[in-house]
Length: 406
Image 1 (cartoon, rainbow, N blue to C red):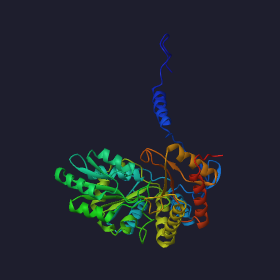
Image 2 (image 1 turned 90 degrees about the vertical axis):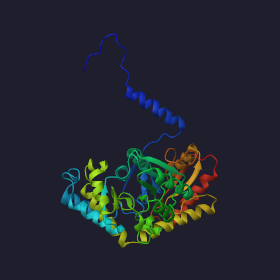
Image 3 (image 1 turned 60 degrees about the vertical axis):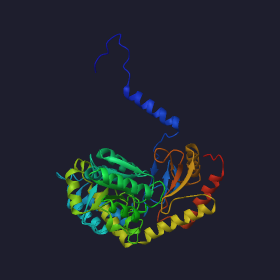
Image 4 (image 1 turned 90 degrees about the horizontal axis):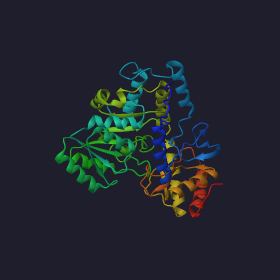
């Protein structure tokens, strides 16, 4: 270690300065966040910050993350193949397991091919720059997930944002882009992760086709939960085969880890060659791959899981509406209760935790300013009595002008 020169002032720590300045501003806005500590297997009941509660804040929608068949598949993969893929897919990490999962995902969605990514975020920031660049346009819903927004930035294409689900504005943006850009990509979520509404995909895709645009559907929250066969929002809206690029995750309904992009064989080959988030990452580990394959089998074999999930969500929405609490515009298993004020949303979140229920408070920048909310996500395995108990507890807190945690 170098000896300080006498007489020199103490060295300032620039990292500490950055952290203090940025975190101070975040605390001043009332949006400072921390990570809660959860214990136990992922399921409808867990220990959160030392308290056993009913969990209404996760994405393990079909309760497959601790399913015995899924757990055994992951354990067997670790025993037989080890705990790591050992490299990127283009060097030593392309295992037969990856190819098998991709074939099964493509078959499930009725596509020619699929490609597995390490996260949904990495999938979107890989696929969007692969399809659009300078001279091109990406048309993006204003409530699209952050991974789509960041994918647009990395693409360096012109991004034309339209108001949420506004078909007239979408038609205007598509016409504008068609006139002035080389290629056009329409990127939308299937299920919006903070509002729980489904995009009007049939109309959107019809407009995209009129203007020669490609369509990217981020169906992270729809895959496994919607549609007659669980194929997601595209199936629900009757346009599954009209989507050019499907993006789904393995870490939500499928109870594992990772994500995938599905579409044509040409799309897969393109992504293997140009998607930087695929090329420059270690491949998914064998236990995650085999857990996803097992979950896909269970999900296909047990349609009652998605049916019961949606029934529980409908019971929750209806019960809250009867108590004067709006969950609009949700029609799915993501049920928002918009409270407006950041502080109130977090007070109710903490008070609800004290009552034995965990539904996370969500604030800006995850949602627009002034729309802080509880984001409630039931699971297929929650009982009707548990849904009703949550309704009663939340209604009591919402009607209290100043709820406090004990």
